[in-house]
Length: 395
Picture 1 (cartoon, one colour):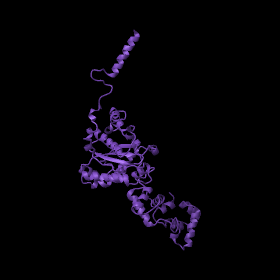
Picture 2 (cartoon, rainbow, N blue to C red):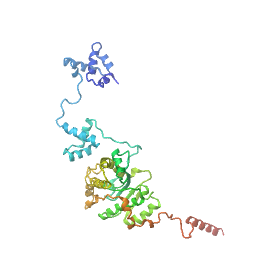
Picture 3 (tube, rainbow, N blue to C red):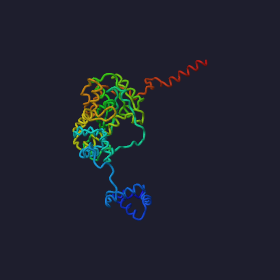
Picture 4 (tube, rainbow, N blue to C red):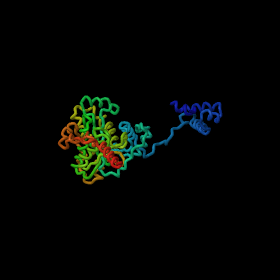
């Protein structure tokens, strides 16, 4: 680092000019410029300012920028409100613009907010991906509203994502630890339910609740439910249980089940990203205030209503609108009740699953290649037939 820059960073604004003036008493401007690491023109300019001001060091190095603020610059009080809100919420310029307009009645362009944050050196805190892989892109226009749903399970008791008080409240109040989530990729309408156990009965119950809720509110035609390969949803897409689920249960309802590739969470990107929103805007702020399981479920119901009807979304094609606003613009005549999905405890509902289907009668564990009641194995039968044909040809 040059001597001039070191003196400038020392904290004394007069130090660079003071050293230059003192060196000029015994050295030429060219020698001073070489020692300080600046141009000869800059040495002459400082000397000229020093003489014109009558020996004042404060006038030698002037502050950069205009001497007077621009006439249309945002008032300092508004800038302070923007900076304080940005540091508190960690919102970006677009979401800050919406928050300022709705909460304080202040209308500012996102680009103006961007410039304010730059002037005050406020940056949006971000977390980099550990894998470094490219983000998953979805062509949203290829899907009709309410036709493609991503479904996943979130483990709520995540010590890394929650404050200590919120984490402790889960165990103190014996709250359910699993959150089942379904989100429509086109409109971001989202449904939630909770469970104490991560079981196949609870997973199947949640899928059926989503299907019957949509059918009851007028969603016709075939739609798709995409899940991961967890045991709560029947395992891998080519597993016997998964195939029988679709054949006996979901095909008659006009529903197609889809599975994500193994270890490819980015394919379920919309529902995975919504889990982070749950942690930051719901669990981290409200769990410490929960006093019972009943109050928790009431709070979760209000969160679902706020998410679907009020909360602005800044994702692609959302333009700061709530999911139900997007649904109303894309699907005329959509029921306004659709976003008020009831928050339930699946363990209680799954106990009555046998009234719809007696899943114990579906041959989950019977391999289709094993023929019982005295029949030989299918593979062995084909082998014996082949042997008989070969013998017949040889004879």
